[in-house]
Length: 229
Length: 229
Image 1 (cartoon, helix red, strand yellow):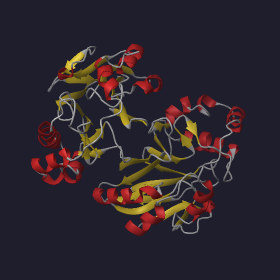
Image 2 (cartoon, one colour; image 1 turned 180 degrees about the vertical axis):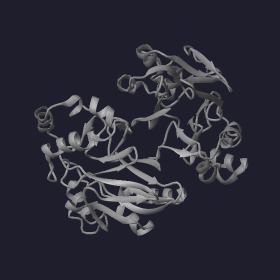
Image 3 (spheres, helix red, strand yellow; image 1 turned 30 degrees about the vertical axis):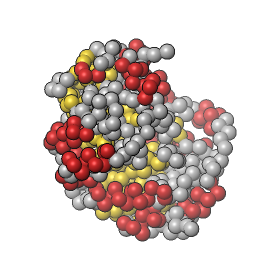
């Protein structure tokens, strides 16, 4: 399995292209509308065939490129069944498995940032969306976010993966591109070193972050797979 | 061998940490002064011991963090012998080999962007500095840059590496993080598909880029390994 990481400078979003090097079946995770043409060109140059367009959740900070890419390069668009998506091909849930060649992509439902977060676990790597970030985690204060759900997703689901598992987040704001489950269990500032739920919730409740600038257009736009005027 | 890519948002610079997972001997390539503390913390969390601070060249667009990091975490600072560096521990040249555990790091002199560019070739990956960029190459119009040297470095040195070799550049401006030698031979916009020297030089001579904003402090600062007031 090959992994290629791409970045959107405006919204600090990581997009990923995964492909099986034998069959050249590919998936693209969390594309960004403004980069859809870049990504379509790159997929063509890589010579891969898109089988899945995987969304980790309904994003609030940017509009997905998945709908536009599906029109250009094909593939089935996957979002969690809780999302309310009006246009996905597959409404996924915990335990679903997709395949690229013989490589399984396992769906782990990791709510907390929203109620519809998926982490995609693929042979030694996990794509954690806005759930687990490098030394950090996603916010929990809108889109049916929940401190309890986030804490459980991090500590009872993601932290049970093997420690050497590579962690690929949907965002970073300090220049980190990846981590491992072992590092995050030890060094994550919000839940590392066995921090209690109470300690975690105190941090989250004190963040006082402004809403994302584009939330009012991003959420409805993403429920339409980014296929908006 | 493990590779960790880090990014500087201000100057679009990629820094790399490499380490042997058995001995935990590490190298850091092209650190940025403003991120030196981030990188020192990250090295500590990874539990690695820095043996080498590798510079791909004397940068014109940012000040290296290598001198500051050397003071904090140790290691030998490596720059090409043509650089005029006043503070490097090792003035490297073509054919030099450094080791992290049993893993060789091969020095390839790839001038063209400057007269002192090194590409570091390490078991299936090459760190190409400002010589080979994703679908692109570094500019050649200052610091003893040369179209002829760049064309030779790209086509006669880097393009002779195995096609599956991963390419990790020092910069990207479109959100790409890596490539392969095979992709660049095919799709590089300046030298791909066997483009002639004349075609390459016409592109380079027509770029008309402004000088980097920080060139007047970066070059002398980097000759002092970034150890400036």
